[in-house]
Amino acid sequence: MDPRPAPVGVDGQTPALPTRVFVTGALGFVGRALLNRYRELGAEVRGMDVRPDPAWDVVGGDISAAGTWQAHAQGCDLVVHTAAVVSNVAAPEAYRRITVGGVRQALDAAIAGGARRFLHVSSCGAYGWHRPPDADEHTPITVLSGNAYQDAKAASEHPALAAHAAGEIACTIVRPSDVYGPGSRPWVLIPLEMIEKGLFFLPARGQGLMAPIYIDDLVDGIVLAAGLEAGAGQIFNLLGEAPVATAEFFAHHVRWAGRSGPPRSFSTPTALRLAGLAAGLGRLLRRPNEASRQSMLMLSKSHSPSMEKAHRVLGYEPRIGLAEGMQRTEAWLRAQGRLARAGGGGGRQP
Image (cartoon, rainbow, N blue to C red; front, side, top):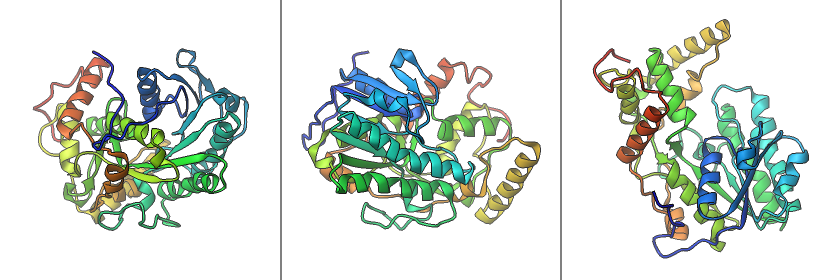
């Protein structure tokens, strides 16, 4: 297959492409996709993660602390910061140390290395789970909500905004919605495993809203935001084609697991109680899982953010609809041997 060309906005917005790119969290779901995309576009790619990968010129290090890993960004004209805690059940200290504290360390590496642009990957979770309809970049973000993930995502934006305001480096922030695709842990692998174990259920009778964005669309949105001069000093929501009910989204996982019928669902109060019991049992057995009250709140969202600004300024337009995205994800799962036991239909209820 021929490499995809560089993305061009719907109004002809053509991003400048970097010569060298440095990605934090480079071996994660989004980080590795960025390495692939920028290499495909002809850039030299480097990065850091908790473990090294010489094949991708990725060094090991601790994003929350200064270290030799920072020198690896020397000479890179773009730094993309993706490293963060991706969970609803991690210890609060981990969010503070990694998700929030890591931003300044990544900024220091970018500035010392001579980068011209720093792009920070935040999240639409920064608005809180129950945001107002069509929340845009002027909508207040959450604070002291009691959810460590979303509070940390909101707080993580401050160092980048402060660095831009101080003239240290041109910064851009993107807030992706629900990113899925081959390799996604929160939206593909974890729910699939839970369905197979009979532990998966949805709140809001399965009618909570998701705003799924396929990984390729997110990466192209990042290329536009990082490469356009109009993106400097700006925040952009990046979403997929259209919001969908959680029952529709996870119906694909049910089929992959060889089960029939819709995903099991309950009213939100009942789901919250069940999640609390599941979390307590996980702690007792020392088998933590993502079946938490916060996960239920996340899956009971009733509104989707607006991506009007990304469309207007960047010319961003998602290209991969849910049906195609799920087909690609299923093909990857089968290629990985992950669905070898599943026939794709007919079976027990999840």
